[in-house]
Length: 158
Image (cartoon, rainbow, N blue to C red; front, top):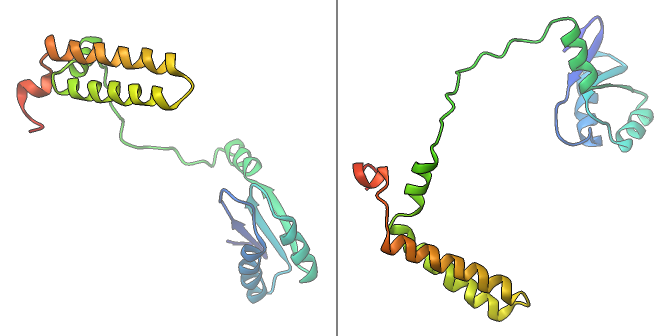
């Protein structure tokens, strides 16, 4: 972006301005005949500063936050207009209905067996015994007292 004989580069990136990035900016500034490079970024690598001194170009570093605050003070930020998202409210009863379906009995049973096998390998035997027991109880609840979820009623996912 050229402004009053100055070249300003908005360089918004999660990493520092590296020497390779500086070389790209240097080539553009050299073609325009400018000696100062204004860079809007979070930070500049020390090697880029050293390279700029060797090439006799001056890097003027403008922090992103300072640039944002300047635009906000001048009321120059665009208004964000996007589609409004609807916030869905879930009921606890529907959550319980979806967890305790007969399909999930085999998942709870598999988790129970996997944790029981893990108890033989690790030093935390009591922890895995308790979690295995909880999963086994949940598997029995799902198998003997299943709930019918809304997806099973409507069959939209089959």
